[in-house]
Length: 137
Image (cartoon, rainbow, N blue to C red):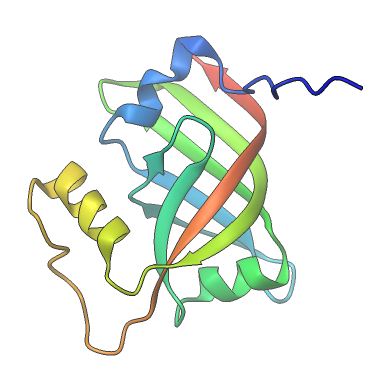
């Protein structure tokens, strides 16, 4: 039996948005089935979307309960061009040294350390496997 590499569902025409400084609006499913959405900084490792979250946030609790997720990324240069990604959280990694959130601060703010760290914050990295996309522009 041969194993084939999974073909990326991200269209070539919109991969540039994954390297941009655009925010991703992330939607999860709340405890009563209601949608919950907010913008986040994100990274792309060539296969997965990654974003940081603290364990105290509702989004973290939503994803522990239900790993389904949707993200919308609008081109900062053209608001009529976007990429929507639907998928699943396949892993939640601990980030005790804040290495990932610091890398996002470098990407988005040009600083070496995340400036809004609060004592006691427990950071995790949400790892999303894209399963379906829609796009425009």
